[in-house]
Figure 1 (cartoon, rainbow, N blue to C red):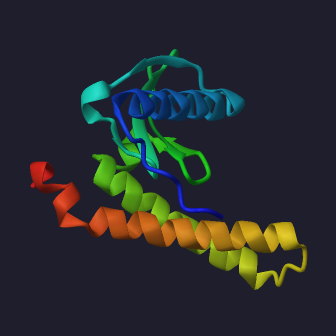
Figure 2: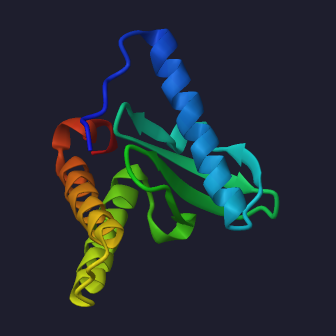
Length: 139
């Protein structure tokens, strides 16, 4: 998989953010969660790698949803207090999932590619969650 290209200007950044928001909403809808609003002040994006949105559903429930250069995923908002914790949660969850899938000794190239993707993205998310430069405002 090629390294994603960082947006070069505000217009490209805005387009990237819109695309990620659409991907996040689509993923939620595919899982039966219908969008009502975004908690903008708690959402964060680190283009071109990941966007994490705090979404309020039409049923009034809050979710963290992640999109970007990785599989879309979501969790109830009460699982993690902030974006840094969301990244750490998915890093650990995906690493465990990759290990469990690998334990089944898959032979299908698509399965192997997915396991590798999960493992690599888990490592990247963990590194982001531990990067103090990204989280100084939360200290």
